[in-house]
Length: 279
Image 1 (cartoon, rainbow, N blue to C red):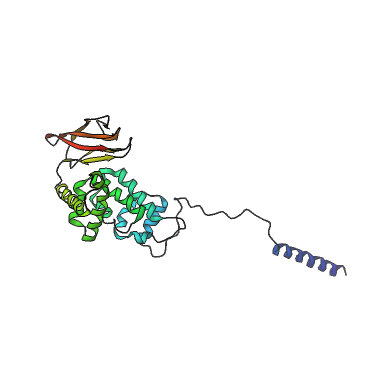
Image 2 (cartoon, one colour):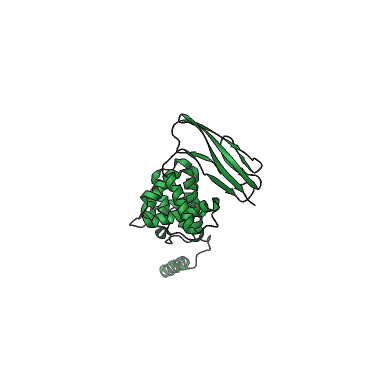
């Protein structure tokens, strides 16, 4: 009898343990959202494309210099394909490119110019406006390289897009608002044909500022060998210039002329830049 009672007790204990195991679990901490910092990477698809690699590197926050060569075979439309919720790869990539151009300055290579100038198409709205502004920066940094690629290397559709993109800021700085588009493009093309020769010059040849404190640099271009440059302003109350760096800063309304004095290549030369401050 005692043996049966022991059996019954053992069975009851086993049932109690089983019920405890199957019953509701005690409440634990709520699951956390995955960390979406740029350092985190997501699994790449089995077949990796150039667009996949660019998206991954942009997501990681890598410099545009690490993935820019891949852009040569990728379109903006491919980069725009949604992969991560809330992540606009085209917007982020454009921002990275703008930062890279600013950081590299006149050290940008001809290959990088080729890639950037062949990717004007496929953007619209704020994306296109920002990219067009970057095109003007590319032109100012190296007019000869810009001109050679646009006039000699791009197919007609890409050439038209690059010229149209550059015209936004170039035409604004040269005060061409009263001229029709065909006339503006003719002037711009003629200027690029002159730039293509690669003669020693100062860039840009004009500046236009809309408010006090705006600034831009005047640069010597197509320089070979060791040189020395200095800068002066004929009206520092309108536009001041750093005599060493060439940084021009808007001070007050009016017009001024900045002179770049160049010594090198066995010659001394002066180049001027017309500055308009209008507000």
